[in-house]
Length: 149
Image (tube, helix red, strand yellow):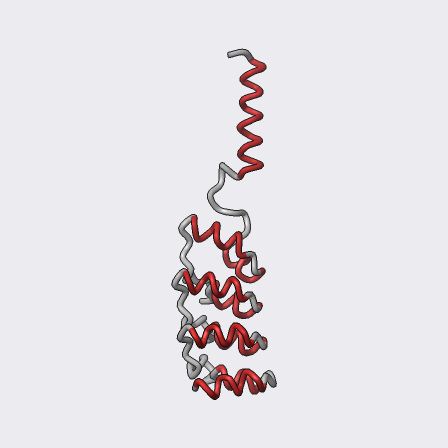
């Protein structure tokens, strides 16, 4: 093999790694950041690479907490299909339902309830999702929670 053909082969391999991502099974962005940003494709890549849908950060927050907080319905749906725990609590005792309620994401509140979220779960300060709805003046969500609580 000539020097020129060896050099061509090296550049071709490098190009394939860079363009196709052949050298890295996980994306550069963390799965937690992807959940917070709603980047469903990156989350799928991480999950395919073996990441746990229920993994917690140092603060006890899960991917579902982050997606519910930011209102990323497709991400919430995906995580639930990957057995994410809808009743998981962070280090403050907050649930994904608490976060979705506080931020006014009614569709996610409905989805979490339909998937078994405990509407009466209390955080470390004794607040339920209904309390969060009233604190944040989310009357439509408060009514919904009352029907299920």
